[in-house]
Image 1 (cartoon, rainbow, N blue to C red):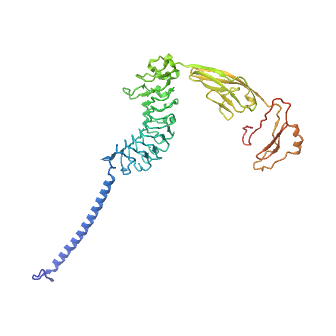
Image 2 (image 1 turned 90 degrees about the vertical axis):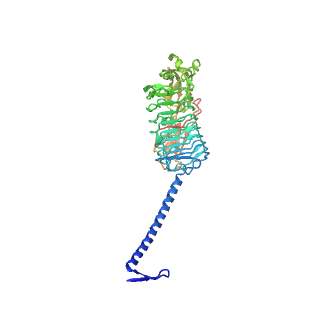
Image 3 (image 1 turned 180 degrees about the vertical axis):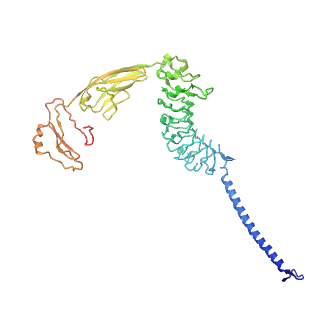
Length: 496
């Protein structure tokens, strides 16, 4: 079949059915191709938008320098005048350096979700406050540098979540307190701890003694005046301990110091050695520091602050026989004391020696007098007996001891009992719990014998008792009465 087609005023021509069908198919294909091209352009626009968003996320904070070296991302913001941690930091950052700025506070959101961060430097800012759990998400962090800031304390919440921390640098702050549990999350991983140049008097020594992986401990230039004996014995990987310029007068020996070679300086020392630095302390050079004098160290810088004849001398220049102690000597003790049973009494014992003697007391029955609610012993040699018992009578022995020996002295204590005090407080029937406070009068047969007793319980309730006694004017000097009682749940006597 033929079709007639008119074109541009020219003579019409006829198309066959086959040609018409072919043209129709071509037009359909063109329409389909146009739709495909349109969809492709839409997808391309979406991809470009996604790429643009990704690039925007990877953009550096203002005035910062960034390095995107696969697979890590480093941001350097040094001396840029930052007042706070930039909120646009990429959460995938592996190394972040924010030193030499004016950041004052570390907020909880500053490092949220930065699980890939390995190294964080906040050196030389003005940080005085770290919010609790500010580093909680930094589970992969290896090094945290907070030195040269204005921190005054470290709480147990500050470093929570740092399970892989190896280097903690806190020197040159104003720290005066570190909570005992502050390092708990990285107690087994920490290798380097720097607390130097602070205001620390007390150190969480128990925590320090559990740092099983630590290589370097810097405690120099603080106000530390005490080191517990044996605190470093389990730090088998310790290579350097610096306690220069503190307030130490004595340093107890430690088993660790005798197990490995000890040196005064790290330069030239073997790998399997320990570098000890105690210079700049007001050390009292007596027999207690003989162990430090005997360490085979070159160029040690320890000097003596006392006694007077050794002041200013280096350890290596002093002979061993000059490191001497003086045995205790008791210079004063309380004379014989006479008290009435139930009264308080103080026994004093003063001793001198080098080092200062430790004073303890032995009771008349040969037992060490403990600190309790009734007896209290003090470092100055005083023993307070708050309530004397008749069994306390006899000689109390004061023992003053130090590494050079010991000295003893006795103090006699006479305890007079209450004469003719028949304390008959037993009742025919034990008071039951829950009874009312209605007074219970004495029974008739008890009334008959009331005048035959010196002290009686006349009226009794669940929470009170009426105690009566009659004048005993025939007993001279007695001007005080004492009531002693105990609850039904224990046998501890209470005195009034």
